[in-house]
Length: 114
Image 1 (cartoon, helix red, strand yellow):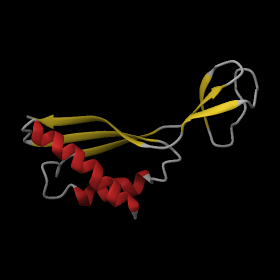
Image 2 (tube, one colour):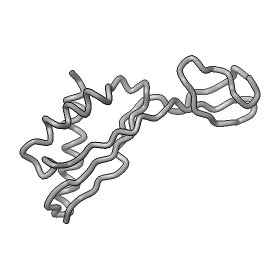
Image 3 (tube, one colour):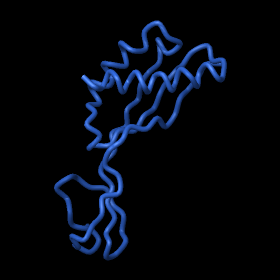
């Protein structure tokens, strides 16, 4: 399960931030998850429960926002969210589209108790 190693890396970054700010605890962590990241939100949540033990994040909540794919139409420049099967631009019906963001896991917010 690669979610555990990703979770450990995510948690290490958060713990470094907590240490730098001399935090007593980490209250919450917000992340954004793209659909083609290859990461299961459910497995990431489960891995987090194990990884946070015996750290200043032991009581922290992990909030995962699952985001859609983002596209841009190369003909009309419209940007839109869509599914993997949605290739046509909803603005002009062109199929000349570009995938802007599809994968990734991004920490967007960390709440610390100082």
